[in-house]
Length: 366
Image (cartoon, rainbow, N blue to C red; front, side):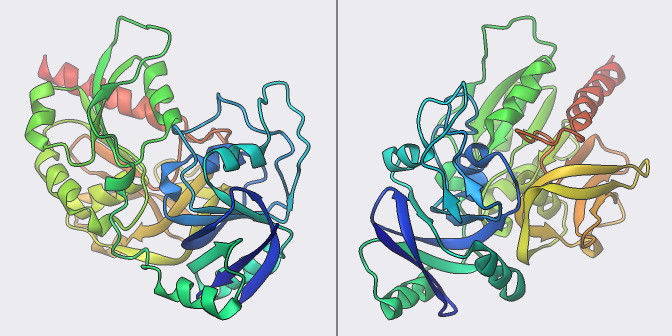
């Protein structure tokens, strides 16, 4: 079926639909990963966004029930150069197209994704509409222009859990650490990484009160990834303000940004963001370079950090702040994704640093 993608700046692309039919709108962004489209589709950080894959051939290994990062696809739409209707993988249970259709996600293929990516890179991320029902260019552009901007949007409240729950796999017992994880759009592989290190994780909603967290008396607090504008998640910022210094804290992505805002720093919207699995990040503490996975359209202004904090990681492509820590309190965070699935795994050590930090606080208490 014929489909169109219209950008808010007036550029319209024509292609063919796969997956669900209908119409969708969101902020169009691009991801440079060569593999991992299933993890990308199910990452809650992409809520409200139409994702364009720069790798040209997508769908060839199908979909399996094991590699999801949440219970369903989270993207507003999916754009590829060429969709592979035929898939081959020993774990696959269905095609990408069938998976999108079953979950109501509109996909479009056959358009020039290189041109689309260059527009986003040069002009910046912008709103777009994909439609199989309205094929009038002017109408679609009007709809794209009218769609709300990502700046100012609190999407954590859309994707967060409604009630606290425990993460459990294979009935493990004998936990070494108790961790409360704030769910701003948490990825399943984060929970797996904590679980593997002996963490009994209680996941709580984004608006869970700080005093209730302290009643649970965890060994550490984790702040998850998530979508939208961090400055709009005011309730989370207020909660974290009152938790700083009370327990060890580790934040990733939106959790990193919320921790920065709770510490008095500022965030800003990037031109087109970082999304991919090949970003070089320098660890300023030891001089090593890590190849990392990214998914963020906002960043922390390093000049706004107070003297109590120090920058620990920067992106070598554009010097964007990618991590910081408190100089005396047990608190650190990173903007990128050390839990990356399917990879890379260079930054896996950060989860060990979190457990080591909890160990040190326990020893200090004794």
